[in-house]
Image 1 (tube, rainbow, N blue to C red):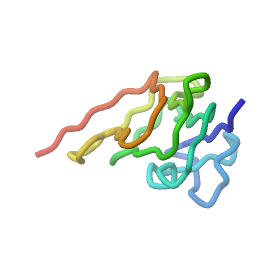
Image 2: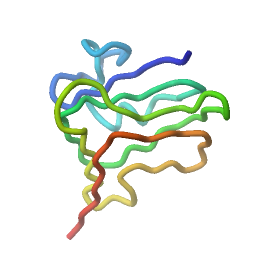
Image 3: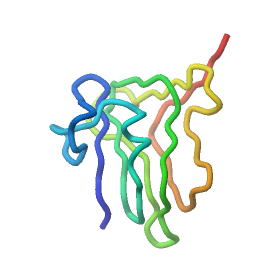
Length: 108
């Protein structure tokens, strides 16, 4: 079993450890600094929205994928790329699973 990291755009704080819902990180930038491994999860809080690009680092393996998912109640979390290259960029990583998110990337 891997580690679990929590992201909360409303009540999170990037000075937190991110390892419990009460100590959730706040920004995509903070999540982008984590080096994930097999079985690790990044869970985004339902009802929250982020602007920018999520670009996770590290790899799962064929038996234990690294995962991006959700926690809490309410509407699925939203990542709005806001015109960035991608809303979620999985570049140079392997064995990732993403589920339960709303994703858009509108630009002018």
